Length: 104
Image 1 (cartoon, one colour):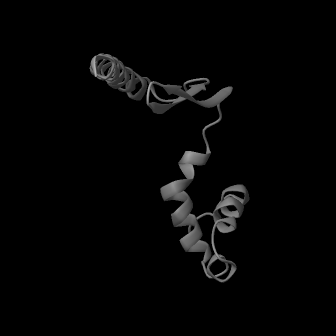
Image 2 (image 1 turned 120 degrees about the vertical axis):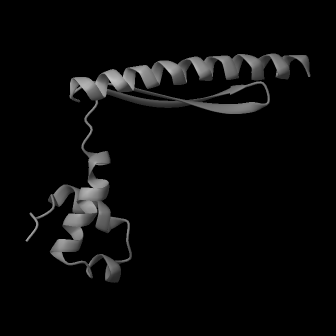
């Protein structure tokens, strides 16, 4: 039998469902749901900030998370390479989009 899911995750999960559906899950089903989706609730950040701003004709959002990196070294190194590539691609795309918008 799988371990019992954490009460905090299950309480949040059930609060988003109709009452009759929330009561219908077995312990095994709840454990499987927590295993599949529960990791996104486990992250603890020292700083988690989200904001929006207007620029030209559009509205944009910014999200900032700051906290201790508790991943394995290999996962962190791979993520750093991916993040660097994404940051560069985002900066180039934003620059091109802004230049096109300014010329319009």
